[in-house]
Image (cartoon, rainbow over all chains, first blue to last red):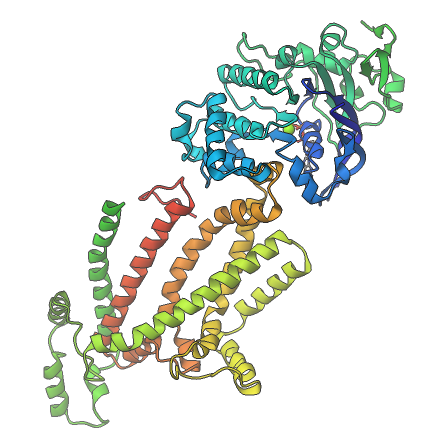
Length: 327
Length: 313
Ligand SMILES: Nc1ncnc2c1ncn2[C@@H]1O[C@H](COP(=O)(O)OP(=O)(O)OP(=O)(O)O)[C@@H](O)[C@H]1O
Ligand SMILES: [Mg+2]
């Protein structure tokens, strides 16, 4: 096992209360595998990702408990110095917003080379050559000529490609892609996703793909983790999720898929209501106020994540051995 | 680039005309007769008349102004009414002292202000941050002459480690106390602006990206955050140099520093128009030059800005 996450809890202590952004999430990942983390805005996807790099701003944030095992070692116990050798090197991350992810006052060549030079013992010249190769690989035309350009001279899609090149520069074991395509138009979106999965095959790395869009999950992911209000509500192989969804929330998300071949609809319209504030989560199952199958027990008891078939987990009171009872 | 600089330098012409005109008119509006300032009390009207004629003071202001500008065009700054020596000589005598003192003060301001700004932003809410906040508040609130005298009393008189008056042989020891006094208020402001600018930058997405790349915190602050945070501070530093040269009168007085601030001040009191004009014009040139330098240095700090369309900061 390349990466194992056990019972991860990351809270933010802010003035009006405790934000339980990640509340007991577990999953695992192997080389060459792709895990999709799916959930609505504010469900704790980005915080989960940042926790994997131990990059939570403290205060107000704190990783309360849990383990992040990278090849068996818990990196949450590492010193800052050893963490720096992992970040960008073994675990790299593509951030959510490409327009603000690059430093505006340094050339993109500088920013990519810098990552390489931080982790690899090669000369500046070699690093620059490698950068050119990476930029070519992610499909930036005239890569050598653009080395000395600044981020504002690139379009959003091109900036995201630079970010991908930067993230891949040290051939990471794990690539976290946090909504790598939300800021982009549909065509670019498809190109970027293709690029990521192509590069994965080449490097045999593991990918954690974060998205709120089930539409892009099918073609890319091997396993899917569905998050709601900081908790994992369903965790299964991609086929199981598609053919036998075992949580009403997953069902709702799938109904609201945006498809590449369709004009874009409003996001996630088909689930009524909006996600709860993470400070004041509803008692019992946090999804119950929006759930059409909710019964009494849902309002009182927090459902446990149970295995309903091999490798398929769901946290719902209404689910039995045969899947969701109500369907 | 060269076209831009040439264009900017050409703008000097209207500015010089405007500034000279304003000073000329102001000196005319001010009560007090320059001729009277030159003679003993109770001098006869005849004597005054002779003096007026000698210096052309009896002509209408526009004739005087025209004459002055004509001479200026030929590199002649005129002669001081009071000191009876060419204004250019006075400028040469006093300006270098002022500029050197201002430069030392600017270095203090930049180093101390930027460093304490960074520290208090990075170690936000820590003891050091509170210390910086308190000391900047005190520095801003304290009158400059009082702070200057405090320095004199402690470092000069009590511990006797630094000279407290004049320039002596011009060694660096004479610069220390006046430069600190001169820089005090500006340093406090720079520290505060640096702090808030740094705090804003430190929260930006690209800083988190830099962390996720595995860079050390030191490199993140001193490379990625600093260059962005410096952009607003550079304007302030550039323009401060001008103020440090031109309005150091209090510091110059307390430390008996032979600088231009006092010369201008006394020249205004004595209606010594050529001196006021000459010294102010040089100051205007310095300001224009500094502005230009700030604008050009912007393009190095912030690639998004091209010369000619400076963003408001
Ligand atoms: N630095 C922080 N301080 C306080 N609260 C935070 C901080 N970062 C995140 N949170 C809170 O944690 C919760 C989860 O945020 P997160 O960014 O992980 O959501 P997300 O699932 O990535 O959503 P999105 O799809 O919008 O990116 C949110 O309620 C957010 O307000
Ligand atoms: Mg997010």
